[in-house]
Image (tube, rainbow, N blue to C red):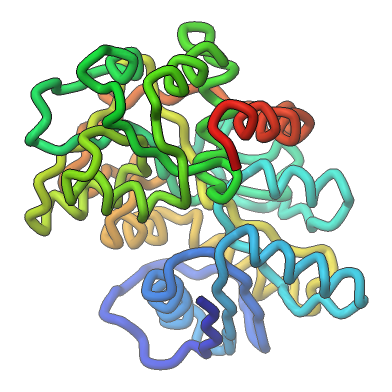
Length: 325
């Protein structure tokens, strides 16, 4: 799906404080769902009325193909990139394509959630945990529970060959001392079905086709709130996370407006807006939305984007050898 839109009517969210004195045109490339992208741009426009924002939305894989093609042609249009994962951002950083925003205010952010050189910054915590259909007899509490006999033949999961969140999850699990690559070997022995993205996994578990799955948190929590017979578990070993980082392209023609956009997303007001959209904010002082446990009850797995960048190709090949393409 591709959408191009220009910020128009402001939505009813009021924000305080003054960011950069920004004006002019700003182009944002994002992998956010279209509705969320429009709301985010409109909220920014409310605070920065002199900036005219246009945005393009595609999934991260397709978006990066577009970015690569434009870079190759010498015609990159994006000023700001807001996509799913830090690994992709780390790759762009290492290529020297990101502009550092040294003045970004990062009080309340764990240093693990932003680049030490301040070229990219996490804006959300979209974790991957366990979804299960309430018809299932086993109520999983840990990743290890998916390797129990009750789950054999009943597991659905997104494939890291097509899903960015699943790729990050694979890398986090692989480097977790309590799980490691043996966990994926165990899933293969359990005849787990790996295909498509998180949306497909949700449909399969919610319909009862499969009883257990791995999925990003907000999808399962929203589905439950709408009446689907599912529950979501933050496993005791921890959850992986994609963080929807934002970055400014070094080729931007409007650095001040780009910095203002980043500042808005990182501000408490911006983080409270993300919470109202139903996401777990990256800012430690902003509570999660309804349906999420307290932050202290969510254990996050450690993750090194630079290490993952160097390893992801081999990990995907190993995954394909286990589960097929």
